[in-house]
Image (tube, protein in one colour):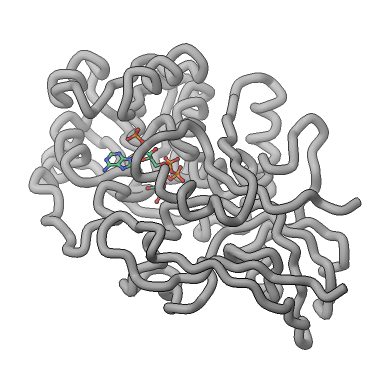
Length: 340
Ligand SMILES: NC(=O)c1ccc[n+]([C@@H]2O[C@H](COP(=O)([O-])OP(=O)(O)OC[C@H]3O[C@@H](n4cnc5c(N)ncnc54)[C@H](OP(=O)(O)O)[C@@H]3O)[C@@H](O)[C@H]2O)c1
């Protein structure tokens, strides 16, 4: 029987937060991989803020998704047909593919062979041991460079990346303080993930709350939000402080970029550093980082939460939860089980 490819396409570019009208669901035949290509059956989709960036026509580290193309996405996929040497049928891979049941890609879009790790479920290879955990690991350890006894502040702390960052900070012997958008999430950060303090940035006076939660100032700020939060934190940064620029979700839906942080001269006053990064800067160290993260999970030093819904049609509404903050941990969509 011929395979059917269900896809979710970009119908039009969103203005502000995406809506259901920006997506279109279609069905078609599954193509045949060309020379050097593989056919993937997509098992899990990674729901990331970066997808919103690719839906606009602004230049980024990857080109925009074109109207009529399937929504680009990180995936956990299984190779079902292969014309690429070294990528056998049956192999599970991390890939840059799309919101569709099947994708044809070249090995350039295959970001690693997935070796299942005993005691760790498969979807974790896309979350805590995939791009999400790797972002937390490299951004904090390589860019933020925390030292024992220092204070690490994390924005979007209850999300996929942030929930791992604070726990790695604790492993390094730091004080971990999280910013998030509800009292319930603050309690989760402290009670379940071991954060030392958490601030509901929606209800607190952030300047005052930071004085209380970070009495010795802030040595490392792992920032996924940008905007006014970044501006306020800059004023409390310590001498030789570091800001790891992971993302700016408060600005991702803005048509016009707001002015930069007016407090940026605090970097000068504190001889501080603000540095952006993507995980692509560290591809050669992925395996080593995954092994370390898996070790910390087994030791019980890192806990993670995957928020998974089933069915391709749920992908657009799951994406919107990134902006409403109605989730904890990593968002994913399950499409299929791996075949053994
Ligand atoms: N540099 C890299 O290589 C890389 C790789 C992956 C992800 N990232 C970045 O990492 C960040 C987190 O990604 P994720 O996938 O883990 O998402 P996430 O943190 O699970 O979800 C985003 C969270 O951001 C918060 N948020 C949304 N809008 C906000 C606003 N206007 N102001 C303040 N907070 C807001 C919400 O939580 P609250 O309830 O707390 O508001 C939401 O839960 C994003 O900025 C993403 O772009 C970077």
